[in-house]
Amino acid sequence: MSKKKKNNDWKKRDGVVYSTADSFDFDYNNGEDQDTLPPNEQSLRVQLDKKARAGKKVTLVTGFVGLEDDLKDLGKQLKSKCGVGGSAKDGEIIVQGDLRPKVAEILDKMGYRTRVI
Image (cartoon, rainbow, N blue to C red; front, side, top):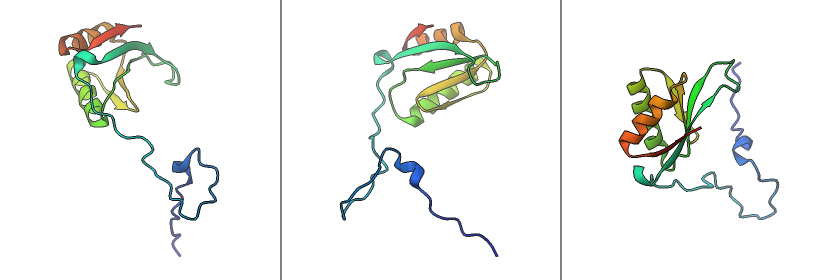
């Protein structure tokens, strides 16, 4: 017999404790996607991070305001210009290695305001 997967979506309803309303329907899209700001209006922080990464150093770019697809595109450009791997999710871009000056220079040339920490 195969086990049937249950539709257990309680993890998506974080913060909702209980509702007595008969017509209550949980809205999974609790926040609307914000349009991507132009590069000259963005203020990005470029910092070194090695927490929870087994001692490996990564360059972390935070402060991006916009759509997830635009964040991934920017992350892809940074990774290809630096020649390293990484990821882009949850509003931050991770570039493998300590490449803070190079990443900041690339972002400056693209028109972003950066602050290296």
